[in-house]
Amino acid sequence: MLDKLTQKISDAMRVVSGKATITEKNIDDAVEAIKMALLEADVNLRVVRRFVNSTIEEAKGEKVLRSVNPGQQFIKIVHDKLVSFLGDTKQDLALKGPDTISTILMLGLQGSGKTTSSGKLALRLKKDGRKPLLVACDLVRPAAVEQLSVLGRQIDVPVCKIDGEKNPLAVYKEAINLAKKNLYDTIIIDTTGRLQIDEPMMRELELLKNASKPDEILLVADSMTGQSAVDIAKAFDEKIGLTGVILTKFDSDTRGGAALSLKTVTGKPLKFVGVGEKLEDFEPFYPDRTASRILGMGDVVSLVEKAQQVFDEKEAEELQKKMEKENFTLDDWLNQLRSVKKMGSLQSMLEMIPGMAGQISEDDINKSELKSFEAILSSMTKKERANHLIIGPSRRTRIARGSGTSSAEVGRLLKKFEKMRTMMKKMTKMNKNPAAMQSMMSRFGGGF
Ligand SMILES: Nc1nc2c(ncn2[C@@H]2O[C@H](COP(=O)(O)OP(=O)(O)O)[C@@H](O)[C@H]2O)c(=O)[nH]1
Ligand SMILES: [Mg+2]
Image (cartoon, rainbow, N blue to C red; front, side, top):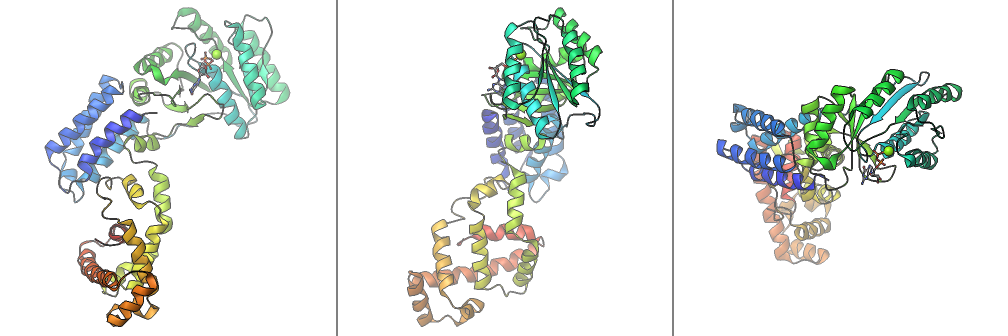
């Protein structure tokens, strides 16, 4: 899902993110590339224009062009804009407490995924500890009631239906009775859809809405239809009023236009996405995570958590002090190498950090060297690691033998270590931020 858009936008980002300075032209080029990507993803033209104009305006401000890390600043602007276009924050359902009956009205065109999504939503609410009741109010298609019954059985949620009934209001009334009797707290009404918006459908929905006074009126729209999903949302909102949207078939090759235009065009939040045919394939919609994904930043949230585990802040501060005082030892370096290893594929992880993408090359983190350095350092005595100056030629030979390397390699390591200490000293003067320091450190990995 959104693969193509992600590819294009992250390519555009990579170009600017690695630059130490960026010009107005760089910004124009990057924004142009983003614009093309959005248009190709079938994002509403007005939405694209608004996105482009506000991004350019902000990106050309002093803050970006004059900043020490303009690429990162630029990415942050684009990220924040995407988040706001996607709807800012995750929107939960506004349901009443369990001692009152809440009602959710599901509507949408035929084949959009209403019946499936009703089942998915019921399963989710059940997992949240609610007692849902599915209500079969699609009485136009004969198979619709049976389809909902099957879904209900699969997830062990009751389904209210009346055989042979033609009036959805009658079924709704029966559902209320059932809910009161059996203490169901959430009723989910599956309704009739048609191939296109027409008067009879709207009339029926209006009647159901007036009778049930729903807490949530959710439009189920097929994300594959791109902009027309947004037009449909607009039409339903004008006639019936919506509280939110569920975009289905997000798992398929959707271009993403609907997700990106919906909030801006209709003002209605995207609450859930359907990501497959199975009943579990249903997720709340997270604007920030989706924006990160589109930018090719991966799941930054989990990355940050992982990095925090490795880079203990206190440890980082201590290290910084050591560097300042120039008593960073081989022992400290060994610890560093080990934490780098703990992080797994460092490069792929750093690529996910905004602004880091493209800045790290495979050469920076030479994996085989990292391994042999670790072996050499492990073969030294604690005393040697505390003071590398005591390592003379005979000790070098012994260390080489112990680590399965050569004394030339041991010598190379010591040289790099000296060079690293010098650089660190310079860096500590430049940068007083321990976390940034740590990430710089890991870039040295096995050597530079
Ligand atoms: N891949 C995929 N298929 C879906 C999704 N949601 C619904 N479908 C499929 O879309 C088709 C129509 O769904 P249905 O619930 O019957 O639509 P309705 O006419 O609006 O009730 C069915 O084949 C579903 O399995 C989804 O999120 N992903
Ligand atoms: Mg249906």
